[in-house]
Length: 341
Image (tube, rainbow, N blue to C red; front, top):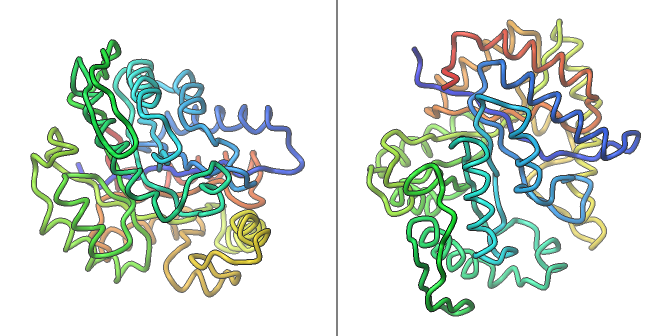
C-alpha cells in the first residue's frame, strides 16, 4: 500500500444563484460522497467578509460536517489564531475532536489578508506575534488539566481545563509554508505542512523539509511520519476537452472572489494571476479525464517529493452536480494510487 495520500481543500465560495442554506446542504452531500472514497482528509479555509469564504467559523462548519461523515478526517487550513480568544478555541477544538471520535486535523496561521484582520481590529504587522502567543496557550490548554500563562496579551493564572481532546497530546497540527524559514520552523516542530508551486520547485522544498524534520518536535510529538502537502485546483470530466472547458469557465469567477476585498481597497493579491494559462504553467491545475488526471497525480508524487496532494474540487462557477460528478470520477481515477486511512 502506498504511503501517499490525497485530501480535499475548500474555500466554500458563495454561488450567487444559490442560497446559503442550499450551499451548506450541498457541502454535506459532497462530504458524504467523499467519505466513501479514497480521500484522507477534508480541510476548510477560514476567510472573512469576502465571497471567497462562506465558512468564516471553521469550528461551526466542521461540527455540522462531522455528523455527515464516519471515516474521512476533517480539519481547518487554517484557523486564524489572532482572531480567537484562546480559551474558547481550546474548548471548541476539544469538542470537535470528541464529536468526530478523534478525526480532527488542526491548521493554524495568522492570515494572509490585512483587510480581513483589519476589520477585526487586528494589526497585520503584529499578527505573527499574536499567533505565536495564542498557539502557545492552545498547546498548553490541550495538554494540561490546569492552564497557566503570562504573556504580552493574555494572562491566565490557573484555568481549569475540563474538556480534553481524544487525540493525545493534541490533534495533529498543520502549518502553511512558502519560504525556507517557514519550512525550517515547521520541520523543527514536527508539523505537517501545506505549500504550493510547480512540481520541480516543490521537490527542493520537500527535500529540505524531510531533511530537517525529526520526530518528537514540540508541537506534534506524537507524529512519526510527517505529511508534506501541496495545493492544486482540480476538475474531472469524461473527456479532457470537457474538463478543460469547465475549468476555464470557472477560473475567472474564482479569481474575482479571491480578489474582491483587495480590489475594494484599491490593491491586488499577487499569488494568483488573472490568466488561466499563466497559472496553469505553474502546475496549479489537475484537470482532465480520469485517465489524464491519474497521470497528473502520479506525476505530482513522482516529481514533487510530496506525499500529500490537496485538491480543491469546488471553485468558481463549478456547480453542485458538476462537483459531485467530478469527485466521483476523481475517486475512481486515483483508486490504488493513494491510502485513505
